[in-house]
Structure formats: structure tokens, C-alpha cells
Image (cartoon, rainbow, N blue to C red; front, side, top):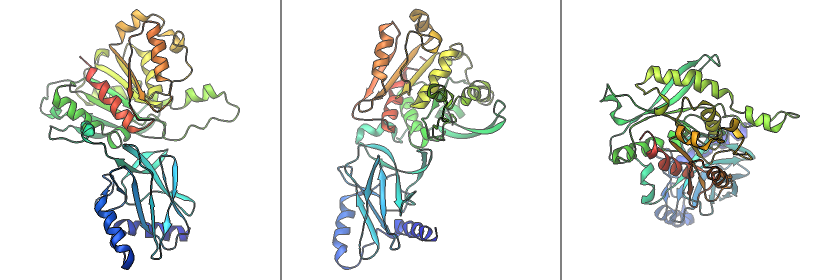
Length: 391
């Protein structure tokens, strides 16, 4: 443990100073690397590594002379780092797909966070993150010269759980100026192993909203993000029915949302409180939670969306107490129903939308080209979804 502490301290110092030219023969190689790459946008200010080249390869460099082995664990692949005579460890990845990725360092067998990166809650823990930039096509999720809304951290007491909780709440730029105006509300959920900060930290939700509102593509709305009670990994109890265990995971959030969160939001912010002005969407497990919240409560919601929704093996004619059985009734109740996914993931979204359309349900399918189960898929889904709300 003492050795690991020294390694982490060395890695932390090298993240700041490791970019400085090494002495003698390695100078030229390091200079060439620095000139041909850019520091990652997700680095802590002042830290020069990790860096990215034009092909999307990530370069890591750390000074940890006492370590006996270092690896970079990113996108499900582990890259061994090589140590030089001065104690600097280096590694370069394969070309990474554009978008946001969690990553870790493995120091002598222990997974730790790179001190040179901002941290993000994902993978059921705090993690490092690296953003592989898109070109101009990614400007929709980057801050632009437009009016900017706010993301507020709101602590509230949930009587249903007898605990204090936190919600992140986006209000549009005009909210503080139009003090008599009331706004529709979108409840937006993250996926398994993430928390209420995911959509604003990893997803850049606030920039997407600001840009769409400024361009007139999206109506101003309030967006509410809560934890969903799915930060810890799903671990079914031995002997328990897997289907029942799956349905219990994050189920405590349903009472929180309906009995505590919605009343808190309506009592704190200037909201429109009828079903016509309330929507819900979620990514991955948040999509599963969206179905389990909205479909039994269509008296409270009139829009829903799933982004890579974790909804598997359902019979659309009978699922969710037969909510889709009367297509005409459902289509009148739900004003916009969206299901999106990445082209490189296999979550069964396309098949389910085809099945729903086959029984007359009005559902919009969207496929993000070239992406898998990742934040770029969900940013794109969000951009496609929100312009259709509350119109």
C-alpha cells in the first residue's frame, strides 16, 4: 500500500511535469510528439497528457520510477505502458472512435484514476474520461455564442425513502428574465453505473439545449436529472429469479420520481404541471426506467423517449399491462414516442420499434451511425428527441 501511494504521487506529479523535455536522446522524439498532438479537452488545466493525434490515438506519459507495471484501460482494452531509463511510462492506443470514453490506470494491478483528467461518475465509480473530438458536426454539443442556461444542484428530502437526495436541474437562459412564464418539464435519466451529473458532465446536455433553443429548433423547457438509484452494479441474489431481480434494480426511484421529485420541482420552479407539458426519457437502464414510469402513468406524461433503452425480450402486445394493445388510444395519449440507438450496438431497439409499428403504434426510430453503447449515441439521440417536445 505504501508503494502504491508513492506510485500515485509520482503519477500525479508527472501528469503535470511529465511533458517537460527529457534530457538527451529523447528530447527530439518528445518535441515531435508535442507538436503533432493536442492535449485532451478533458485534461485538468495545466496538464499536457493524455494527448490525441489526428487519427484519434491517445498518448499517455507518466513518471513513476517505483512502479513495476502500468497499463491504460480504455474502451474495454488494456494497453501496457513501457518504462524508460528515467522512469517515464508511455503508451499509445489504437485509433479511438470520436466521443467521450471512460478510462483508468492500472498501477501494479490496482485500478486508479489518472490525476491529470477531470473525473466523471461512471462504471459504478469515479472514473477518468477522455473526449476524442468530432469535427464541426459536433458543434451542437459544444458551447456556442448563444444565451446560456443554468444547471443547478438541488437538494431535497424524499419522504418515500426518508432521505435527502440531489437533482440536477437545467433552466433555460430566459428563465430569470421572463419571471411570469411557466415551462414544460423533461425528466431525463442516465444509465446503469452513472449518476445525476452524467447528462450535464458527460452528455453536454445543457449546451445541446442552449444551441437548440437559440436556433428556434426547441422550445425552452426545464430538464430534471436524478440519480435513479442505479449507481451500484446490478448483482442479483443467488437463487433469486433473474427477471424479478432485474425489475427490482432501481425500482425505488419510481416512488421518488412520482411522489417526491415531481412535487418538489413543481413547487420550486415555474412549471406547467399538467401531463401535456411533462416528458420523460432515459438512456440504457434509464430507458427501462422511463418505460416503467411513463407507461403505467399516462395521466402524468405525454411524451417519452429511450436512447439505447435496456428493454429486452418483451411481447409488445402484452407488455406493461397491455398498454400498446389499443394502438389508437395510445397514439392519442402519447404525442411523441422516440426510440434511438447506435448502429454498432445490439440492444434490440430496431426490432422493438418494428414490432410496435406492426401493431399500429406511432413510434419514431433513430439510429446513430458508427456509434455503440456510448455517450455520443446518447447526445445524438437527445438532439433528435427534444425538438419534438411540447409543440
